[in-house]
Image (cartoon, rainbow, N blue to C red; front, side, top):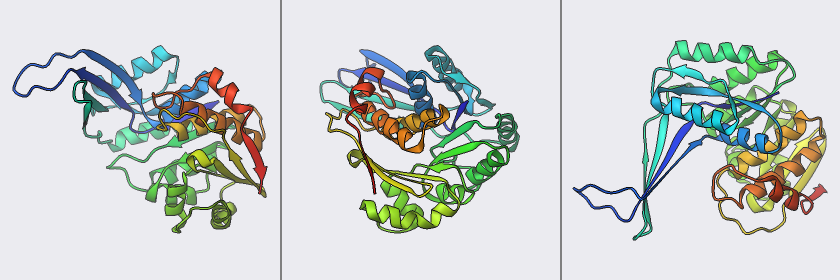
Length: 307
């Protein structure tokens, strides 16, 4: 089984108006709602691939109820920890005449110790040999050791952890020795505290990490990914496509990798599927969405090379 962790899932709401008239009533021409979060995007893609995952994290208030309800309606299995605070929301106001958008971001909820303890109780129930994808960064009131504690707890249970984070949370989480990390090239540079731009630099600077981390995957956008595992160094590149949006491509990449690994595929084959998923998602304007049709079309043109 695959579990995804999104500590701060978001209810996304887009309101379209002809134009904003201040100090007056503005008629909404179109309204769209969606659920956002890196781990949630991973769960969506796994479902599209024909797999199943369980989405975990924190959800509360009316936003949290709607968020979980929408995921359930999409067919995503949820096991969120209920909190007293209100889950966050992104509100986009788009003016059609001026082609301008205004973004409103509500505050992240604070997590109490009791709520954090309840989340870890759920984590303790994750079965052995499962995969857990931890995506994004901890909430503001959480300490930087939260991911490290999470990785350690899961490792002790024989669970393989995939960590996709940034900054201090990634450094400490990686130090706890997850099964796989997936930074992009900029996040990898911050992790190793080096300026990184080339494939050979990734391989070189990843060497100290290999002592604790079995698989290292560094994404480079249109330049593909570098994969390092068990002495295997490879560069996997996608075909050229007409990109509509790159938002969520990294989450789709992770989804393809963890889905393939959970089905018994090799690390090398999982990278090929991951790159195909990440590339397919760029053809869709919605974050973290890809279709099987696009995926199959792209996968046959993904190039794998050992380095």
